[in-house]
Length: 216
Image 1 (tube, rainbow, N blue to C red):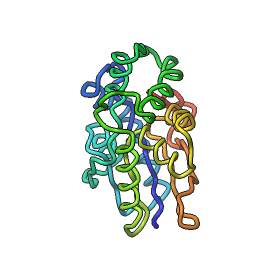
Image 2 (cartoon, one colour; image 1 turned 30 degrees about the vertical axis):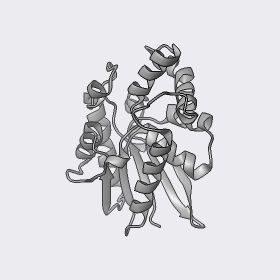
Image 3 (tube, rainbow, N blue to C red; image 1 turned 120 degrees about the vertical axis):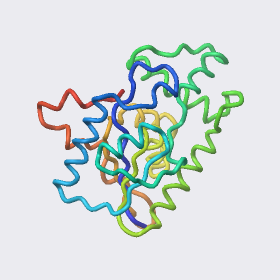
């Protein structure tokens, strides 16, 4: 098993309220990704394989990092949170938050309902999201050499749930914590994934870059 470094995409369109309009990087998102690419090159990081989802924000993040031709895999795409939130509103009367603070309570409720089959006819089942995450990462880990995987916070939290045996509430806390362009490394120990790096943003640690440590 080769180790994998998961990277959340740069800041996307924070004003969006649907999947399509969210799926593009902001100017800051491009800058965050460029800084990360510069950091990886300056530190001599060796990642002979680079993967990303097929979403625009994934591809743009990889490109701004300096990876123009990553392997694209739709299994690395994010869950459609806006779609699930709309279903929870329509089926269960749960309002969609307007600010980040509201998502602290909203996201765990959505995860719990989705995982327990309480969202009627979801666009994708929880089980399918679990399966595609596991299968994609298992296939990547079977390749030669370390790999970078540019994806989204929901998939990163699912990968860590699987590695650590987290319940949905624990997974939700992970998802809420994941910063834009943060790095999360899974290392094989004893035939199982172990997280050896979480939410690392060394490229944003300088005082004049603290403003770029974003979650949304």
